[in-house]
Length: 199
Image (cartoon, rainbow, N blue to C red; front, side):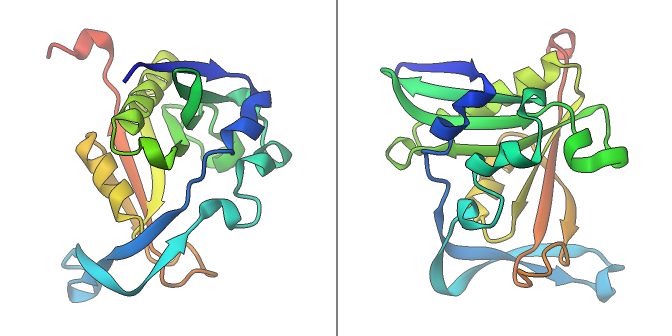
């Protein structure tokens, strides 16, 4: 497949959101605590009782067409993937994390805010190339780490990030008061300079 990745201006956001991010939930990662957490935790894959569809874009303020109302997208990086000029995927990276973390920002970190691939192009390497672009772009901005948030009901995303070298950094069972059955998972990857690649 001939794939081209092109960085986009903020006004691309309407086309960005034309690719759906919804997925079918058939399994989740249950959190098991040992000694009330003092003995550690374990994530166990389990089937859900009744499969359902999860669509982040349907949550208030979460779809791409609402991002510009909340944040300054000129401090983000948007990239789109094209196959024979057809838009087949996109990724959004927050370079200046002050917008989402405020004074708690870490200047060494960039955040992968969103990644999506057109359903008929999934499992063809588009997501891997978009993720690699995000890593390069964060590194070129002087960032030492790329982090991404997902949930325990998005098992394919967890496998995707783990396979790409991300490590699970944080498990928060109480991050979503309105979604008590979902657990926040933060994944991070240390970014090496090109000079470190041979080490």
